[in-house]
Image: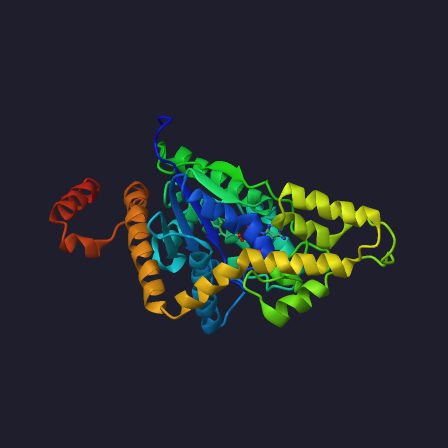
Length: 352
Ligand code: ADP
Ligand code: TRP
């Protein structure tokens, strides 16, 4: 590939609950920045969410919530392709094929599967083979760069592994191996209990939380019991870890100074953080409310994105059907030459 060739950037977000600050600083912010840097494809991974949610209304609602969130946060459908995974059925088609190249032992090493089962999710086959569907998501668009957090590293390695096995078997570069692109600029964002902020731990601060809900969450961030007058260590404080996400260096230094000087309580720091969150997300909350009044537009964005994504997916899938010996007879209606070629190919094996 030449240096100047536009790279395809791809990432997905699972609609399994409300987006939180961990998602924003760990993933979404990079997605939005990267729409300027290549041919970006971002999708809402609703097939994946079936591994943990079996209520159709909930998945539909979450999907549109995430679409609104991303658009409000600055995703621009003129600059990238934004769509729902289920609008590209080729993805599940490729996932099946990749699964036939995937040793069971490779899935058994999956860390995310074990974690999720330990958290109480049902150990279903969909959850077990989740990385195969994720590999198909990546490979079906010939993706070059996949911006994801550290926790997704293993899934990208599995993707490369499966693509390599497939290409080796059929003797050609049918599937493009993506580069790894782990977003490491942000450390793990802590939740209100100090553990990693995660939907599954119920310790999140939502990007679109506001008013009393937001205040209650911020005020309940766990801190130690150092008395107000004593000096405090900012680096071991959950509130300060969150402040760092919003404040520039100068402001961070100023607040760290107050911690160390004493006479500055965790309540003060929490108020400061609350103000920062409100300032940072004030405008996007407003934008989200406006967009929610115009769902027609949101549906159109996903529909148009889906069309574009399907076209791209078909370009990859068509040669794969051929090389693997699969076919779609319903297409011969429009493709008479294809039908003739097919009959010639199979006729070689019969005495006719
Ligand atoms: P959750 O743990 O809430 O279920 P997901 O696993 O759906 O979050 O994560 C979606 C994206 O957000 C991933 O790319 C992940 O790396 C990032 N992410 C999630 N939580 C955090 C966190 N606490 N800190 C940094 N990044 C995070
Ligand atoms: N597994 C990803 C997550 O939990 C979501 C996802 C699904 C994804 N398919 C993908 C991310 C393909 C990148 C590429 O965050």
